[in-house]
Length: 211
Ligand SMILES: Cc1cc2nc3c(=O)[nH]c(=O)nc-3n(C[C@H](O)[C@H](O)[C@H](O)COP(=O)(O)O)c2cc1C
Image (cartoon, rainbow, N blue to C red; front, top):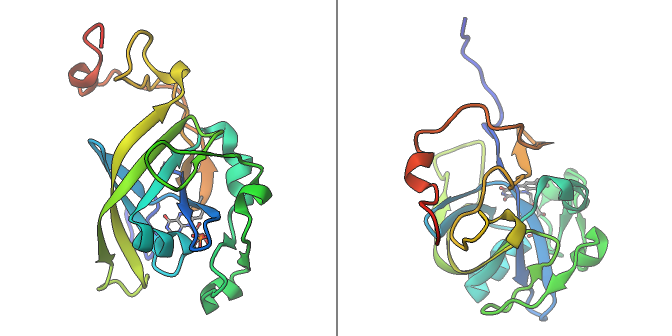
């Protein structure tokens, strides 16, 4: 039986990403976000307008979307309730957020130079996507449950993938049996279990041999 429900959120389960950006003073910021999905080499991110990440993205029009595997969950959780923005919203203050200018230091993660953008890669993340920003649009303006959210469209211009995640002998196929994403579902962290059913869609995208 279904009943009419009023959940505060509909976060059914999406991969967590760590977005790294460059602050106005040239230092780096990283922050976890789970509103992220991809089509082709384009990524849509849902970012709070008052986050330091959003401000850095609006100014620099570039970022790195680092995708942590499930085993990095402790590093990711250290970044929760931190902001690189000194001017925190009342909501964040009341929720226990704290200003932290050195998020790499606090998390224990390591910055590394990117090839094409100024923001750093997160070395520990098995997937690091250097991006330029194509569009920034308002999101959820008619929704009383959120305010000041931006839909950010990022274009991947370089992808770094840990070799062990690729189908052997290719650079084009990430093997879903090797990739262990960190999933946020209703604000709790999860890993994926094993594959549960053969997939018809995979017959289109699976490697046909060679690259
Ligand atoms: C696992 C996780 C997922 C999050 N997902 C989002 C999200 O999708 N969008 C968002 O605006 N904030 C999200 N947050 C909150 C941001 O990380 C938070 O606003 C943070 O202060 C941003 O840091 P910054 O101000 O330095 O950019 C998430 C936090 C965690 C821990």
